[in-house]
Every structure is written in C-alpha cells, then in structure tokens.
Length: 307
Image 1 (cartoon, rainbow, N blue to C red):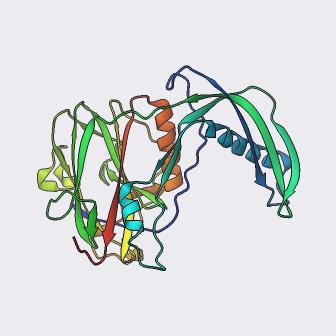
Image 2: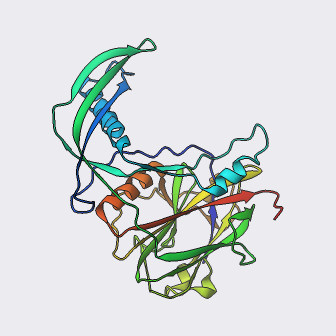
Image 3: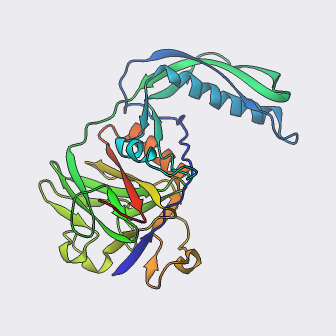
C-alpha cells in the first residue's frame, strides 16, 4: 500500500470548446449556425494555410455559441473566492463545456487578412450544421470525507482524503482530481491498468481506505492526502460514471520522482495527464457515450483550518 501525495498547482484551466463528435450520440435535430472569428498571425515562418486552419477552428467555436454553455464554477469556489486575502492568487477552476457539436460545413469558408492593434490576423467566416448535446442526470451519490470521516469539502493541509460512492445501477467509474494544470487519476488506483473500475448497484463503496476496500485487491489501494501551496487552495474532483467501459485516448506521463517536489519519503505522485488533454477526452466521451454521467465537486485546502 502506498501513500499518494496530491499536489495542488494554481493555474487557470482553459478547456477547448470545439471537438468533433460522432453521429448517433446526440439528438437528430440540426441547427444552421454561422461562425465569424480570427486568429493572430504570430509567426512569419508559418504558411497561410496553417493560419486559415486555425481561424476556421476559432470560427466553428464561435458558431457553437448558439448553444448554451455549461460553466462549472461551483458555489464552493464562489464562497471561498471572496475570503482570499488581498494579493493572493486563487484558482480559476471553472470548466467550460459547449453543449453543441459541429456536424457539417455547408459552404466554403471565407478568409481574409487584416490587422488588429497593428498586428496581422487571419479572419474566417464559416456556415454549417450543428447538433445540441445534453447532460445526463447522475444516478449516483457520493461524499468527500476527511480524516475524521466527516462529509466535507474543506480540508486541512496534509489531511487524509476518502470518498464514499453508491450507484443505483451497475457500471464503471473513474475519479480524477484536476488542479488546473494536471488531471490526476485517483481511481483506478496507481497499479491498476484499467481505465475504469467496475461498481455494483446499491453497494456503498469507500475508496482510498484499504481496510474498507470492496473492489477485490487491497494490496493496490492508494491512500491520499491533500496539500496546499498557499494559505487557501482548491482542486476539482470529477466523478465519471458509465454503464459501459470508456476507452482512454490520452497517455499518462512517466512516473514522476516525488522527491523532486519536496514530498516526504513514501509518497507518490498519482498517474496524471495535462488538464487540456483530460478535458478533450472528457468532452469527446460525452459525444460518444449518450449514457455518460458526470458530477463535479470542488475541494478547499487550508493550511490553517477553522471549521
């Protein structure tokens, strides 16, 4: 059994909005959309075609503004953002997911060069068809527990962290922690090569505690502690559940030397990938899997804890 250190890094998460989807996973209704946008032409050694492609992608993103956008900025972050000491930097962990997907370009994109603030830009106008996508209501319940097994979203620096989980239908689960730079896989555990763990309906699971493990292999259970880089820090937990297995189309980074981060002996850094790659995967998974259920919870880590 290994103790795992979860590092919280303060950066802004910018989630790409445009991702190509697959047919059959969204409603059949199509909407005509028009997108107009531009990209800066920063490098003289890049071709015109390169900048046209960038401008086209930006225009498609703009076209999808037709649909509602889900901005995941939870009440927890709103509450604690106002309590940060003046001069402190607070995580902007708001995740942005567009609720539409580009289906087809219906006319040739129109391009033209111009200048903005004295710098060259490539403009693009494109017309097409798009479909809405919907959030599936979650059929599971969860609790984030501190070292006293209290249900809370506020933790002290270095405190142990557990999750309880129960679903009304059998399926598969993965849990990620996102610190706005890296998305760290908390479940499946470090030595488990699966993309998701199988969970049974109506079973109350407690994760990250070996003596309460119900997944069948206590020897690989990781225990987690939360640490902060400043007086008040934050991270985001993603619960991702599906009746069927998901595939993973990103790579975890090579095992990181925990000592280089100044961690105590015996700690590990969880399996991780860049936040942007995780966001791409999650949005694509929404498009491919109409039964995917996602819940998001934000955690606060305080170096001085006053409950």
